[in-house]
Length: 205
Image (cartoon, rainbow, N blue to C red; front, side, top):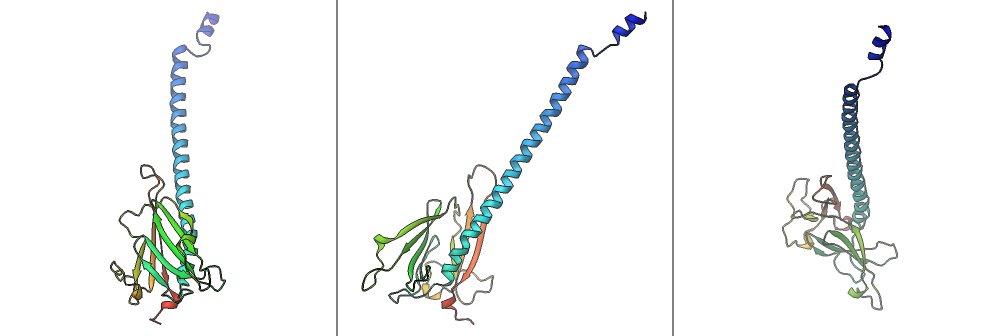
């Protein structure tokens, strides 16, 4: 009697093993999904921060160049054009005493930079010598202007100058970049903006 009872109670039944395996598989599935989602959202968050930081770093030299805009080496006005997706001005960006012609403009979804160094005697800005550089990718501003302009009355809430802008009125440039790698996937678009006062054009001191 003792031997038969011991055999009946020894180990797990097949049904108990199956139930245990089902529960274990379900728990592992939940843990795996949680870990995957955690990794995905962490990656998405990190990607967003990286894009934001990179955009801020890009805007710093652009702001510095615009801030120091001054008359060209031929004596023309510091600003040449002021559009919503393109801004052209003159600035000595390499501290050689000559004022380069700087053009920032949107090409597709890429913010480009074009630089023309004045050459010859007398000096000339030759369009066929423009050196182009890709600055920021995945710019998706849509109807939001990349460049907006303000006059000397700007107080932080003033409306921007209407297009077409009178370049003689421009005292401050606001740059806005909306960045999004893939519109069909997360993370959400990142908006980076900065304001730049043109030092040599200040008349409200």
